[in-house]
Image 1: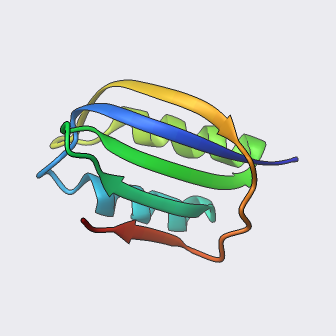
Image 2 (image 1 turned 30 degrees about the vertical axis):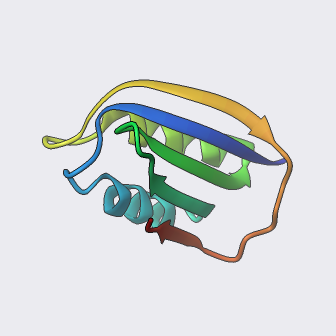
Length: 91
C-alpha cells in the first residue's frame, strides 16, 4: 500500500548536509517527496512510497551519520500527491 508521511526532524540537522543525505536515501529507497529547512532549525520532509519502503527510509534517516544527529522525528500520515521525484527545496 502506498503512503505519504509528513516528518519534522529535530536535532543537529541544519548545516550538516541533511537535505542531501535525505535525497541520497530517497534515491536509494526509490521514494518521492521533498525536504526543506525550517526557520526554527528543524527540517521538514514529505515522503511517499510503499509503506514498508517509507518505514525503511525513515529508519535510515533517523540513524543519521557522523555529522547528522537526529534527536526526534514527528511523523504524520498525509494524503498522497503522486510526486515524480524527491526534491530539495530552498527558502
